[in-house]
Image 1 (tube, rainbow, N blue to C red):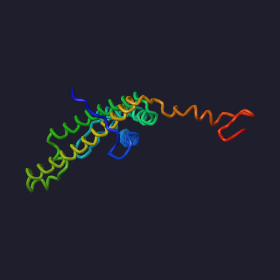
Image 2: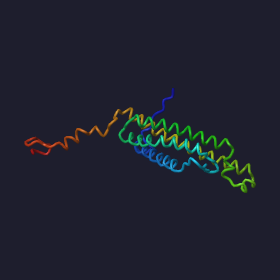
Image 3: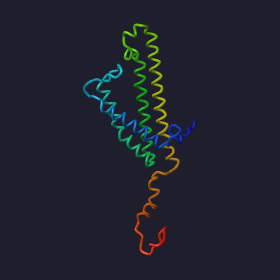
Image 4: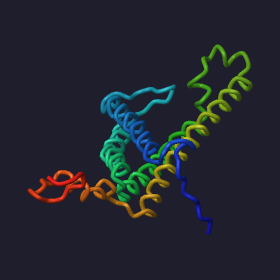
Length: 196
């Protein structure tokens, strides 16, 4: 069985904490935007593809389900809580599969050219124009899935790092030091700077 090595950095120069926080912030903006634009009454047309109200509601429900998961992952990354990162990892895998389904449906329905290119331009040479359009669309879909896959890998790597280091509550590691700083000194008790 192939063992994938977890990354220790995000984009080669940032910490995994910063990477997970970036992924969570970006994903939260996308889910909030999706929820804001859904309609349970009217179909919406995006780049020539019509989304029926039931599709919008299902997508909105998925995004609504993901909102607390995304916030929990951001907090889980900050406080190094593995379970929050694992749940977000599984949610991102579900998003990957749903996006793959949408992109595949759009691509294999044969409506990419018809929905993006005007009919006047198609008459100039439909096979060349549509072939270039399909290639261009496939390239950007591939880029999207590579970036999404990297985001999933980043969240998985952060969860693996938390699991490996066993520092589930890193901010609590300095609890005793903070208590010693804030504890009142008794008269005549030796302090670190001399007598009180």
